[in-house]
Image 1 (tube, rainbow, N blue to C red):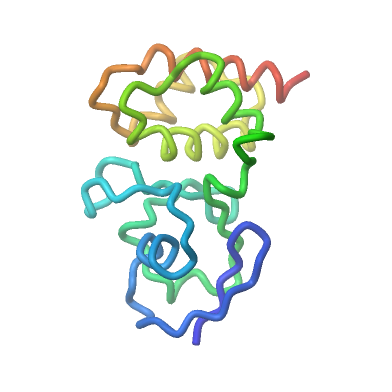
Image 2 (image 1 turned 180 degrees about the horizontal axis):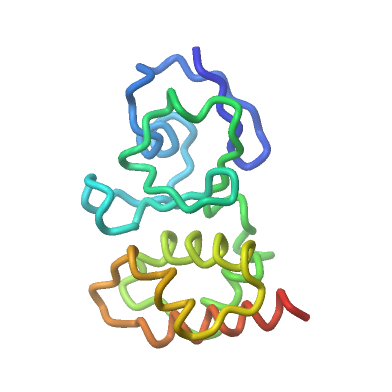
Length: 153
């Protein structure tokens, strides 16, 4: 058994320790915010935060996560009370198809935990590993700037 702490809740997981976190989140814990994109850690749709670091959950085995804090999209807020970054993405209409957006939000959250006032270049550099095929990059950057303004205030 592996003990995982996800969004502040402890779970005992009996799955094979080599199972990627993404599958445990979606199939066992029913947390569907993280999306399956490429399955190779190349697109970022599955991004979650582990101890304040953005992580591609499709390639991280649960065996290395015991004793660490995992935050998913669901841990940031709800539809009725979205978190600061979630709210900024909504207000800036940063989603087109929406598939990449959970990963983008999680990566943005990790950035703002480290840097409350990032420059546009720092935002671009930080967000580079996460892909958006719809081309909403400018709205995503605008949403991150809006969230940074809220966090810094």
